[in-house]
Amino acid sequence: MSLPKQHLVMARTLVVAIIATVGLAGCATYADEFAGINSRLDQLDTRVQSAAQSAESANQSAQQANQRLDQMESRVQQLETAPRRVPRG
Image (cartoon, rainbow, N blue to C red):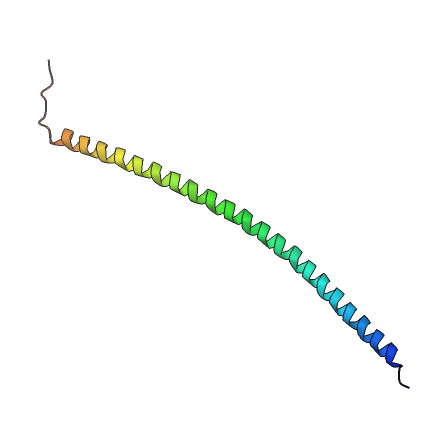
């Protein structure tokens, strides 16, 4: 029992429409997933930039502290090598 040609054309069209609909629905799902992933990546990028700024600030503070320590070390060495003073009285 063969289907009339018109029914075959309609069946093919229906199958193509179903496949296209499923395909487009899949694309929409992927688009949502990509949007979620992009949002998370943006959040991570913001956190990384913030951490980099904090690290840079900490590095500058550490360099300033090292400079002060070097100055203190120089002063301590001067005091240690200076001749002893005789106490008064």
